[in-house]
Amino acid sequence: MSDIPDDLRYTKSHEWVRTLPDGSVEIGITDHAQQSLGDLVFVEVPEAGRVLAAGDGCAIVESVKAASDVYSPLGGEVIAGNAQLASQPELINQDPYGQGWILRLKPSGRAADVPLDAAGYAAEIATGS
Amino acid sequence: MPYIPHTAEDVRAMLDRIGVDAIESLFDEIPRALRVEELAGVPAALSEMEVSRLAAARADQDGRRLNFIGAGAYEHHIPAPVWALATRGEIYSAYTPYQAEASQGTLQMMYEFQSMIAGLTAMDVANASLYDGASALAEACLMAVRAHRRSKSARILMPSTVNPVWRRVAGVITEGQGLVLEPVPYDPARGVIDATVLERFQGQDLTAIVIQQPNYFGQLEDAEALTRFARANGALVIAAVNPVSLALLTPPGEWGEGGADIACGDAQPFGVPLSSGGPYVGFMACRMEHVRQMPGRIAGRTVDLDGKNGYTLTLQAREQHIRRGKATSNICTNQGLLMTAATIHLALLGPAGLERVAGACAARTRELVASLTALPGVRAAFAGPRFHEAVLQFGRPVAPLLEALAAAGIVGGHDLSRDYPELGHALLVCATETRTAEDIEHYARTLARLT
Image (tube, rainbow over all chains, first blue to last red; front, side, top):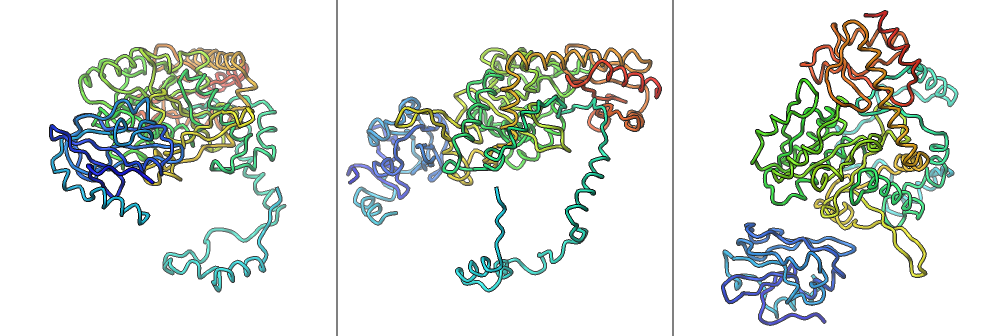
């Protein structure tokens, strides 16, 4: 059973979004996503200053078997990519909602607009999509 | 390996199984107008004996000419064991594209090839080969754009001292992806990239610069200074190198400060005969930090559960069969058989043998240039150091000279008038270790009679 914290918003493509006190957002991939991918061996994070539209590919997570895109749930300007992932991609496997965050964004929209809440995401993965 | 044809019964059984009347109906969705009903111009079937006679007669038209042409593909001595081993059934028939079917022997061959290329180029990591030098250069340009994320221009300096065929191939492959290949003229006195022209690009957003060493004219570029220029201007360095020359020249991994970022080229000089333009075998190597942007495949060595050596394809997560349209390249295979021949040839030569070959090439070319430029009306186009090719200029058009030489059994060189009209009546000549002093003298004497 995968972990789905109540205080985050989610996408169907398995990203999570957390609003930080300063209004910026933190983005990562869900516990369910990391379990499906298996052991990550490489993560490509975006550089600060890059401007993203909602739905843009913003990172690549690579496991032994596959490389998958991470799509930005919101538009905005990248404040930082998680530099620790360069040497420790396994942080996403170990702590997907904490140390395994992928990028921080100064969003142009509101996190509340990200389609799913925890219950919605739980229902989504229960239907096997 | 026996050839097992399908009998009419086999075909019928397969069609019945999928519920189709005839093979033709599998192609129903292709409009009639687009189908080729008969192959016009293809003659009726011939017997094996007739085909053999025809092929032998065509082959005879090539003759046994004395070859002084290089221009991207080079005649070298290929020791008999190379193809005796490479055509053994275990290797020759083992075309195994993906991980699950690749034999340990095939994987080990890739691993050895990669190790040799990485060693020769002094780069961190090499892939298991690409199609040929030209497409390897195109892939290197695309890779540089992926690897250099701070550069937004996708602009690559492509000097006119780079092989014109490779430049054209790189142009065709990259233009649809928005790359700009910016020409850089050469210094007319030395036939190398003009450093004063490079200064014009100072401070601009450049993704990479291509340095061919030795360059298309056979001249040696100042790779050190060019690499430093690239570093100072935030551009990556793509080295296109002749692997034979690396036995003598500074390898790209040691150019300037920190070396080139990507090295590529054609491994044809190792074990691959000249054959109407191919197939040849490309290679590519890079610094470790760029490895995830490198196209193609890499075989890695590991140990199995019992601690025994084993080989496996690694870093293939970005190949086409996994990433589809987002793969690093849509040429996701390697040139297996020719890579095998190259690996065997290199293993037979060893470092000392390769150095002797490279040294002999350079020496023969020096002798060739000295002999030919001693003739009236023939001069070397460029001053400065070179490897095993040189541009000669004549007082009259080169094409009729080449025809007369061909009639005398000599392939005299490559006419540069189409690609470099500004050089006048210019000929690119080459002598490898396969040319003897007598061959060179014969060429000079024949030319003397004609000029």
